[in-house]
Image 1 (spheres, helix red, strand yellow):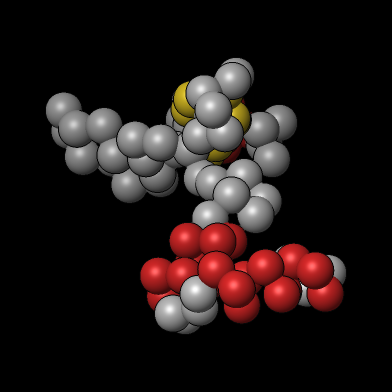
Image 2: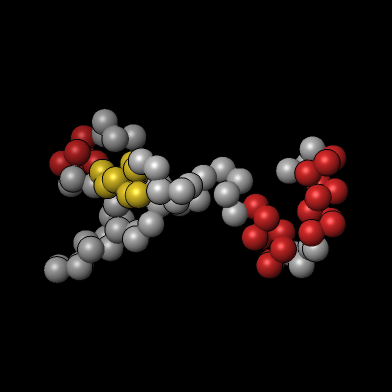
Length: 77
């Protein structure tokens, strides 16, 4: 993706600080919408695979710790 001529010409490659403990950076494509004088790039990198799983199960689906532990034990997550 980063080799695409349009990505290069528009300088759309950005490096955002990794969210997994702050180690390293994650390359991302900048927002294609340009607003004069504004940076429309995301302020943080997307989560790593599984990074938000527990929060989603707990906060969105309402599962308790016991149910989440059961899903882990079963290999579902």
